[in-house]
Image 1 (spheres, rainbow, N blue to C red):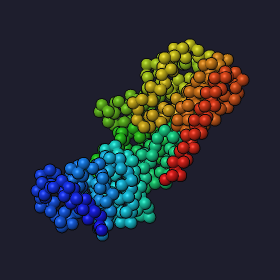
Image 2 (image 1 turned 90 degrees about the horizontal axis):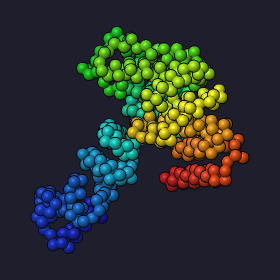
Image 3 (image 1 turned 45 degrees about the horizontal axis):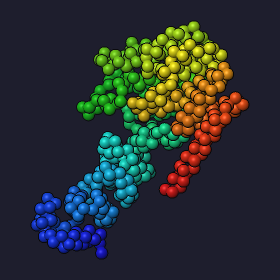
Length: 466
């Protein structure tokens, strides 16, 4: 018996049990009697809204017949996209991802569906339905893998952004996979893609990668910005789809490259890059958005000059730096990390500064709220590092209770984002001062590692189950 016959037979049984005529069914569902007749007696495939209305009337769970509905629509030699699209979106609303996976899988060998599946994925992503969109992007990528199309590269770009989360190991995998496709994107779209790649590697502290992709972004952005004829293509401004004004990609390239130099101990080069984005007199635009961005870069240049001096052991401007980031809360987390890191490396007492920001330090978790995915990931990494540096500072001073409190907090946050670098540093620091750890501190330390082990074990089991 065909699947549509199964649905039809259940509807017929319902009508018989409830003593309903086609007219009664039409009145209760709001459907045309002629349409119902074609479905019940003529074997016509019903539309999704018709199925949902009949299902609701039968007091069955929403989606009760979806499994049969998929089989019936996919069985056709040329599946009807007008029926499948609303079904996909309904499944996304209901989070029935397995149904979306089944439909996408059935259409894999039909390249003709790639454009419409891609467009559907774009719509779903705009609506915030990332998991559903990812299934369609993956299907299109598989379908077009051998064609090396720009659509394939766009799918990989979207998947890259969707896959980013708190787990740094997974973020590294996502970035490494996307690297292979970034240069296949449209030249302008590449600017945001390169920015995103550089930002991810920045949060992972892969400074050579940061420098590489920031340099590529800067080179492309300069070429476009200083082109003699920046004409619109096809009557549209090709730069309108950028997430930031074009000049920002030039300046941001210098900022990222300066950060990479600073982290690699190349202070002179870092200062050279800082001087570039501190002076944006070459920018042609004068609108409000431009002035906003110019002000941001000027502030970043100022704070990074302070940080560069500290990094080289020059503490002459320490309190100017502190006053600046106290007045500019967005700079607090990174700036305080720079101060504590420098204090540890050069054995400088900063008790007065830490006391000054005691309440802010105790509420570091608030720093992660209300931020974008990139800001949150960057701040989470900095937060775990700051807590480790604070732990080191207090343990070296012999203030063991405070030191171990920060160490356990750093470990917990590092486990949450799978930051293996900080985990290893915390373990090394704990072992160096283990003899000074109270019994409850050692017990809490062991509990943290047991929880991490169990979480990893559960994660591996979940992966093996798929």
